[in-house]
Length: 190
Image: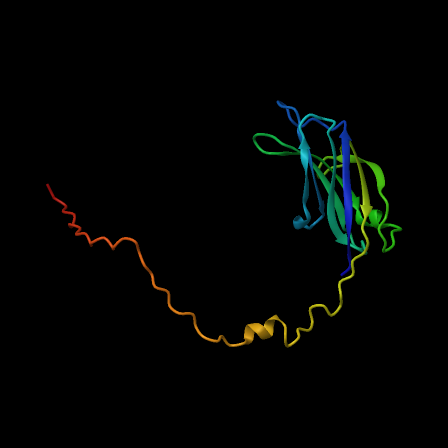
């Protein structure tokens, strides 16, 4: 299956809803391909921005080259808190939108401002400014893993060993302690 990389540059967010009641928000972002927890990439938290964080950080995610199906690139905005991090909102970028009109060659950066929505809802929680650019399509080689030559790894592993290694002499710096006598416990019925 052919794939390609997407370099997502998270520039900034503005007018995010404040989900911390006591402390100032320290917002970070997690970018991943929906349904693929291995592809998660995190951007460090902006400690001073509060409701208007600025990152200017780039993450790279590998996506299917075709973009067929209902795949999407998700950007989850969270805030660090002492008692556990909390979701601020998310932006969902459908792969069909990202890959529309792109050939097999790398593309230039596409910039945009996207509405940050509450997770699992349509309530708007702010605006996220980001840009993305596509890498070239990577086609796997068809017969790369199908044939192993006689001089390959499997042939070397199947060859018999010349001889067994000699037994190792164990030497301890101190002699074993003498066995100790343990007296049985007497239970009295007084």
